[in-house]
Amino acid sequence: MKKVVFALVVLGGFHHCLQAQDAPKSKVAAKKQQAKQSSKTAEDSINYDPNPFDISVESLPANYHGHSCADIVRPLGNIKLEKDEFESSKAFAERIEFVKDSPLYGKLKGTSTLAFSPARPLLLPKYDADTETMTVKIVSHGSQSVRIGESFYSSAPIIKDLSDSRSYVAENGYGKKIEVNSFTYLVCGITFSNVNSIAKSTHIPSDFSFKVAPELARDSKENIGILYITNLSAPYIVRYSEYMKATMDSPTEISMSGPSIVTTLSQVWVYNTKTGKIFAKEPL
Image (cartoon, rainbow, N blue to C red; front, side, top):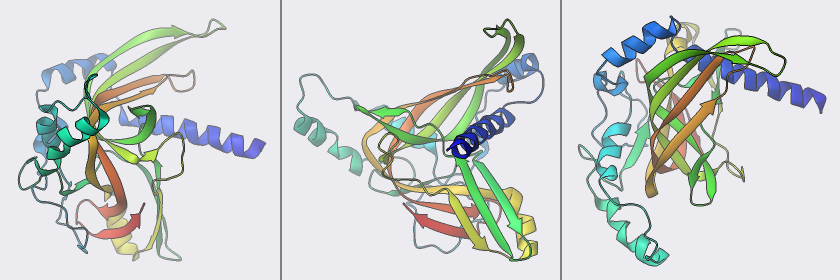
C-alpha cells in the first residue's frame, strides 16, 4: 500500500512539473508585458477542419489540428442553454433539441462528428529500438472537476492562451518564504459527458503501444498528438476550471478557465501532427 501511495505522489508531482514546464520560462514581468501586447490567440495561426470528421480514415492531412474549439463555442454561446426555473426538464430538452441541426462553422452542424486536438498535450512518448515499439502515456487529459448538473466530469483544454502572469512571496506554516510565479490562462476546452470523474466507471484511453520503424520513430517522437473523437451533447456549453497550487518544491501556480464544449467521447487517437500518420485508435 505504501508503494502505491508513493507512486501516486510521484506521478502527481510529475504532472505538476509538466504543467509548470508549459508555463513561460523567462521572467514573469516580461511575459506579462508580452501577454498584454499580443492581440492574437493560439488559434489565429492554425487552419482548422471545416468538414465533419470521418472516423474511417486511415491517415490525416499533414499538420492536421482537428476542429476549432473557439469557432464552435461562438454560435453555441449565442443560444440560451440554461434551464429556466419555471421550465420542466422535458420542455428544456425539447427546446434545445434544435441545436443538433444548427450550423456551427464551415460544413459542421450539431450532429457532426467532431475531432479536437489539444495544442499542448501532457504525454510521454518512449521508444524501444530493440522491439521497434513506441509507447505513449497521456499523463493527464485535464480537469476532472467540470460540473454538469450535480456531477463532475473529465475535461480537456484544447487551446490555452496566457492572459496574465505575476510573482508574489508566499510563506508556509514554518515561516519559510518562497517567490511564487503565477500564470493565468484563458481556455477553450471540451468536457466529456460520458466520463464521470467521481464514479470513474469509464476511463479515457491513456496508454498506447504500437510498432514503428526506428527512422519513422525518430521523426515522429516530437510530433505526437492526441485526437479526441466526439459528438455534441446537451447542455452543449459549460465552464472549464482547473487550478494547480504552488508548493515549496514547485513554486508555480497555474489557473485555467474558460468555455468548454460538452461532448460524448467515442475514441482517442494518437497521430503524427506533422505528417498526419495515424498510429493508434482506441475506443472508449
